[in-house]
Length: 169
Image (cartoon, rainbow, N blue to C red; front, side, top):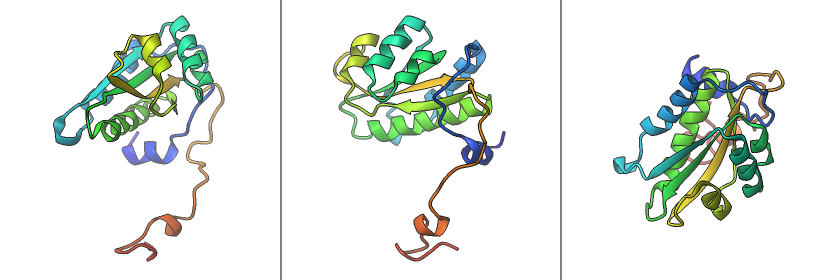
């Protein structure tokens, strides 16, 4: 799959089949995060790959917006060094790399939570000076998704040329 096709078709997935994600695909998802560029090459991130069903259940309870994590075969907690001024930005870039890499292999995902999740630190043994940015669930979509059928504002309403308010045509 070409990169633009992945961007064009990727959708959030909250319902997964029971099919496990193969080890090689899990590794590619993790490597995509690890290889992502970061500001000043600081790499302020940590990625905790979780496949244990009991731990996934605990994560689902620790993330208010992520009950679907409980039914995913895989989750990745993304955390950053709290002292990094670029941590959130760098982590967000790595998250998108994982999402697109997974999608290329037919694996859906969804971002749950956004910072300030001490329950996740506790579940995964993450030191308190490390801030959890998100928990991403991954798995094969339970339902067939309409790839590329997205509801978006009109292009000219959000993309401007040279100056705000001047439509990009």
